[in-house]
Length: 247
Ligand SMILES: Nc1nc2c(ncn2[C@@H]2O[C@H](COP(=O)(O)OP(=O)(O)OP(=O)(O)O)[C@@H](O)[C@H]2O)c(=O)[nH]1
Ligand SMILES: [Mg+2]
Image (cartoon, rainbow, N blue to C red; front, top):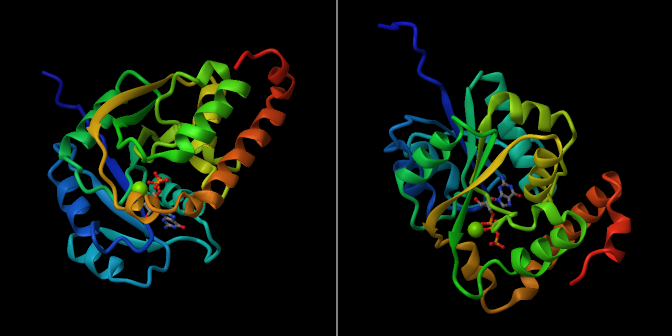
């Protein structure tokens, strides 16, 4: 019998900006995962009760490195530096505004990492949800990175990888804002890592309620995702492709 089997340390990071409505629920749910994750909340100097409620639910709260916004990228990088320092074996991100999270989301993302370098969640979303994914990220990936156009959710916030994969990505200087999710997808794939997308079911999240009546609220996110893909296309010599792809 092998008595030397080491239980991997799983670290779960929630970037959170004013998520008092859901933060307790997502942390409590995550704690029920059989992976027994340590939970870090990277807070955006929230003006509501996010910090207080996150601590009450048992999360470790740290503040993102800088007070400039949008800062999804800053928050993810802050969390990653902390997780790498703590020598976590597997590090995963989940959005903090999910209303229907189950412990299986974490179990399945972590399990997927045993035979893959990065596991990303995809889901069924409401018809009017995910406008930036549908109208910016996927069409632009199709033009500049056609080999990545099969990914259902290139902006997924539910992403899991081993420590060393994240470490090598962090060294490549990810962007600070909303572009970070698609940047991770492109750089991970083009570094030669294997990426798998797994189905997590339906996704209900509160951010959709903010823009369902006014898509204009997504303009900054759209601009940053677009800019990131263009920048990556230049970096990887893909700009000429627009002439070759049929749309
Ligand atoms: N620390 C920190 N967290 C952020 C920031 N911006 C967003 N977040 C968190 O990142 C996660 C994803 O942000 P959402 O606003 O839900 O955006 P999304 O669901 O990815 O995108 P949509 O589908 O367009 O709503 C949530 O947990 C947010 O609270 C930020 O500037 N700093
Ligand atoms: Mg959301």
